[in-house]
Image 1 (cartoon, rainbow, N blue to C red):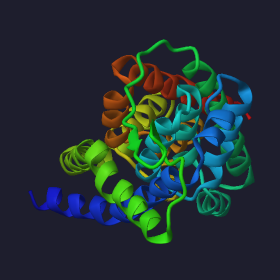
Image 2: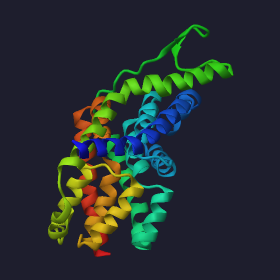
Image 3: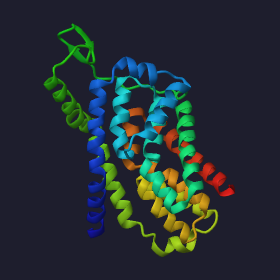
Image 4: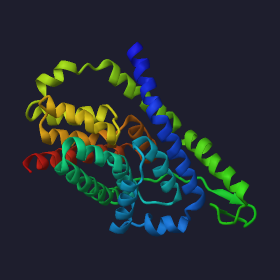
Length: 294
């Protein structure tokens, strides 16, 4: 129980600031990003929309948890499924700080490979996402009394109304939408970190091909941010983990979390979730093996 409380507090302390930042960005997107812009750049089933979502994801300095409310807000604005899934892969998988730490600890080859691998994964996942048939959730639109139609923000607001709208969407609507699933994800991560011993077992069993299986299972079960994954992978490699398996863990760990799994299930359904996790697992294994050959 002491370990569980320790890891729960550890995850809460590390994740809540990212969630608050993500919620606030989602409010800004909701208030200031026009529906027409989203429909034009993220709302089409083409490579351009997927590319934009992937590049935006690699630029934003937020983790997996912080990307969830932003992705949902894009979805509510009219973005297609492909760009959303591409965004959810690219955003947490890498960042400027993660790339710098990777270069310092693991070298140039790791750094260059993971950067382009994330873009490739995002693009392919986006293409797959646009071809998945699923029933979208009905979006909640507001009735605008000033313009007499059902819409989202089609009339001008004064400064205080905009601030109120941003705060309401960020810290009331979004927590109601995905807050419970996110909190459950944090609790599950703390349970896994507390009650699954790895210690000496890692040192004795991660040599060779078994390391790939470990990288997938560990990456799916335990969330680690893109920057935090790097020193962990460096330690595993020094203990005998295959270089390819290390790359696989660098890709899987930051992208997946229990929060992502629960929110994807709620917003898009089990079918989309299974395809998403299956693609991440398979593509990470393939890219990790390719890296080992290099």
